[in-house]
Length: 220
Image (cartoon, rainbow, N blue to C red; front, top):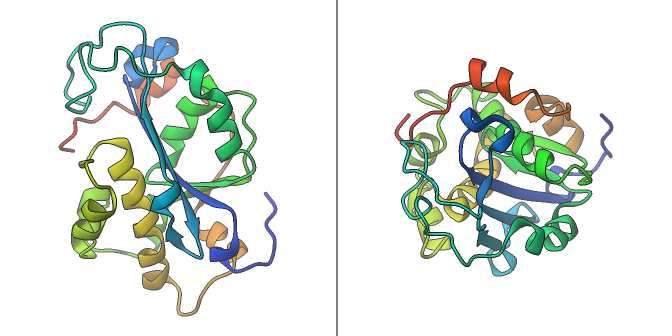
């Protein structure tokens, strides 16, 4: 992995979150909702945020890890993944994707968009562990600990925790807060990546993922 010696906030950073049907579906796992928020000078550019539900073409059973509003036939009539493919490629190609446990999102996204090439992955969960934040390292836990929950809710108007726009905005606000916790001075992109980047490996077999990384409920 190579990075340019530029300040982290000058990099092409896009926060991302997907809501899906769960790794237990293996190769049939689908994306139900997606959000992408660009970071400008280290701050989420909410004015250009992108979010949409995705019609999976079938009824989605209610399960503990599927957020309210995404199960059943709730997404019928939303755009299909093919409909939004050009927009996603245009927004994400060449960017550093930022997210909480971003490897899970990348695994699913890359399976559905195998022609998407990105610069790398920045994991706010990995950064939180490096910064030795006390307590749980779930997204909502960290936002509560760092007193960012109200700011996320205000920025992601109309969304809620465990939905794509809220979680994406949360990751976008969490990143600079964690950087301030971990680094004494503003890091370069290279320094940030050394702590928080995860490998751009090919997606694992979904059978392996389902066995090794059980899908959590919304409350884990």
